[in-house]
Amino acid sequence: MARDVVGEPGVVAEPWRGHAGTVPAVPPPSTDLVVVGAGAAGLFAALAAAREGARVTLVSARPLAETASYWAQGGLAAALAIDDSPEQHLHDTIAAGRGIVRRSAAKVLCTEAPARFADLEALGVRFDADRHGNVALGLEGGHGIRRVVHAGGSATGRRILRQLSADVVEEERIDVLEGRRVRALLAGDDGRVVGVACDDGRAVAARAVILAAGGAAALWSRTTNPPGSYGSGLLLARAAGADLADLEFVQFHPTAVVGIRGREGFLVSEAVRGEGATLHDAAGERFVDELQPRDAVARTIHRLLAETGAPAVYLDMTAIDPARFPNVVAALRESGHDPSTERVPVSPASHYVMGGIASDLHGRSTVAGLYAVGECACTGLHGANRLASNSLSECFVFGHRAALAALEEPVTPAALPPAPDADIAPAPSRETRAAMWRDAGLERSAEGLARLLDDPHPLARLVAASALARQESRGAHARIDFPALDSQLDDHHSLVAAGAERSTFVEWT
Ligand SMILES: Cc1cc2nc3c(=O)[nH]c(=O)nc-3n(C[C@H](O)[C@H](O)[C@H](O)COP(=O)(O)OP(=O)(O)OC[C@H]3O[C@@H](n4cnc5c(N)ncnc54)[C@H](O)[C@@H]3O)c2cc1C
Image (cartoon, rainbow, N blue to C red; front, side, top):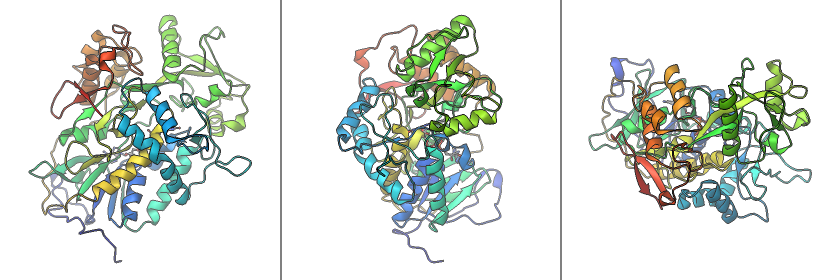
C-alpha cells in the first residue's frame, strides 16, 4: 500500500547488525520515527507524528494493561472551566513544586493542556459529563479549582489507552512491534541517535527516536507501578550520552494496599479520602488529618509504622458510596476483601518519579536525535512535587510537541552502528529494590544514601548520588539530617551529566 511520508523516509541499512548476530525472520520497516513505549505518551506521540504524514515504528515491551498509563485512576488536569485559566493552573503547579518548578515548561503544560484534551475527544475518548452534558470537572489536592477530567470514573487511564491503541491499530502509517524490548539506542559517529536495537536482534533506523518508556518507581520494593517501570528509558538514554535530572524527587503515595492477595501495592485513590474515608491505626484510632497533602500524609503513616512496627494502617471507606469508585471496589472485592464492610490495610508506596531524562520544551534530550516524553522525561515542570493529574496531561502536551519537533530532524544516515552486547538497562534485583526502599525511601539520611552508592544497579546509584547531594528537605525529598528547605537551592535542579556518577546543580529557566 502506498504511504504518504513527510520528506524522505528513514533508510534501513545493515539492518541485521543487532546483538549476537541474530537475524530476524521478517525485514524491519523503514521509518521516520521510532517511538519506544506504548503508554499515554508513546501512543499519543505516534499518532501525532502519523497524522503529520510520517511513518512511525512503535516498540512496546509489555502489554497495554501493564503500563502505568492504563492503571491511572484519577484523571488529567486542564483549565477548562469558564472561571479557570492556564495562569491559575500554572500558579497551582508552581506552588506544588516547592520552589523548583521550571516555569517555562509548566507554562507550556498549562497553556496547551486544553487543546490536547480537545484532541483526545476528537480521537474518540469519551470523558465523564455532568447532568447538563458538560464535561465534569473534579477537584483534587493542590488544585485551587475544579479542573480534573475523568473517563469512566476511576478508569480514566484504561479508557484513554483503549481508545488510543485502537486508533494506532487503525493508523496504517504506524507499525507496532509488540512484546519487543529496545535494548540499546544506536548512534552515529557524531553521537546523533539514528535508531534502536531490539531484543530480537532487529535494528530500526529513523531520523529520530522518542523515548516514552515510563517512570522508575518500580525501582523501589513497595510501589503502585507495574514491574516494567524501573527506569529502563533513563538508562538507555544515559548510555547514549544524555543527561538525567532531578532523580532525588520521587513521590510516595500514602494509601497502597498491603497484604491482600494479588493486590499488593494496588493504589486506593486519594479521592476516596477527599470523599470522607478515614485512616486508623491498629488500635482503631485516627492519627492524621487525611486531607493534608499527599507527601505529609505518607510521611506520617511511615513514621507511625516505623515506631510501632505495624505492617499497615487501615483505610475506612465503609461510608463511601461504592459506585463512586467502581474500579477500586471491584479490584478489592475480586481479592475477597469488601471495602464497604471492612477497613482496607494500606501503607505508602513509591508512585511517581519527577526526575528523568533532561529535556527541553520540545522533548529534546541533550543528545541529537533523541527525545524523551512522559514520565521518563524531566522538563522540570513538576519541580519537587507533582501536582495531581498533571502527569497524564504532560504525556499528551509534550508527546505532541516532541512528535512535531522530531520530524524536523535530518534524514537518517545510511549505516547503523552495531549495538553493544552488554545489558544497558537491567531490571533491578529484589535486593536493590529492598535497598532503595530502606535507604532512598520516604525519609533519607547520608548514611543510608552512602550505602546505596555501592549498589550494583546503575540507576539506584544515581538516585542515591542525587539525593545525597541535595542537603535539604523539599517536596517529596525528605532528609532527616537536613530537615529544612534551603532557599539557596530554589530553582536549582540536580543534573547527572553523561558519564558522571555524581550530580551537580544547575539553574533552569
Ligand atoms: C496506579 C497509578 C495511578 C495513577 N493515576 C494517575 C492519574 O490519575 N493522573 C495522572 O496524571 N497520573 C497518574 N499516574 C501517573 C501516570 O499514570 C504516569 O505518569 C503516566 O501514565 C506515564 O505514562 P508514560 O506513557 O510515560 O509511561 P507508561 O504508561 O508507563 O508506558 C511506558 C511504556 O514503555 C514501554 N517500555 C519501557 N521500557 C521499554 C523498552 N526498553 N523497550 C520497549 N518498550 C519499553 C512499556 O512497555 C510501556 O508500554 C498514575 C500512576 C499509577 C501507577
